[in-house]
Image (cartoon, rainbow, N blue to C red; front, side):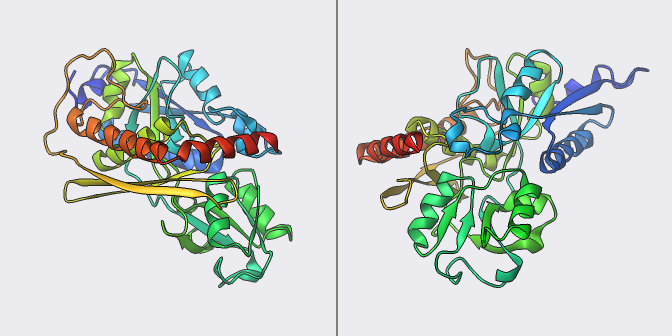
Length: 361
């Protein structure tokens, strides 16, 4: 079958019964918006296909009284969706890429990574603090975030603030901010706010020198069964080469560090003139101890080709046969090299202490 995926759509699209592709998603409004955007892209490629959206709740959606880092489950927002994929109840699943662990369960793969939107974090202020920045918020102001990564970096940068966990979907968190007098501001991913059409609530964008972002933040991943070549071909057209390579480097960095949401790890990537730049960092829980480094690698993505059959075409859970293998391996090696550099300089100790403290509280 051809790597451009067009072959996948032609089998039944002209028959009397239009082929239906079942798409799994979480139930939240943001998840539905993200899934609708992926389906719209697929419809543009395959006008003869029908798409049915199957929404379900995940463990992470149900446990709302505990910080994500405390739950100790790597697939909080993916397990139920993968179960449906395994049972053939859905054909593909749309995720926020940052929710997908760097090691997927056997039998699954990320068949597409869509073009990344704004990967940065944004600050949304309580109405009485509109016009402020984190720097100008009053002493002891409480800032809500569900992320150890954000809290660690921002505590270091803004020691006059206090950081407290806030859970729930975007709608819930904004309501808690506006209606309770508990938080002066909350930190959210800019991409989610933009997808919801809530750009007007973004009072401040946090740039890398203030807060580096999570691995895969701002990108959507499409998960399929690893042995479903038809579906791999169908969704493979959505791969954005630059986003893919940046995210392979980021995921390789995180995997080699053995990080997750229970430790503060953050990244920043950029592609320029054939060079992929990766900055990665680790922090103690309170941000007082940290380590970060930047490395770069030459990446060539010009020639599009299909690799022949391989025992394991996946890199950090991603299958992309229509992107040069050499470029993918260079991106993966960059992530591993940067993680090795940090580990050699003592990052493991910072992460081990962060893990122990997080487990103890």
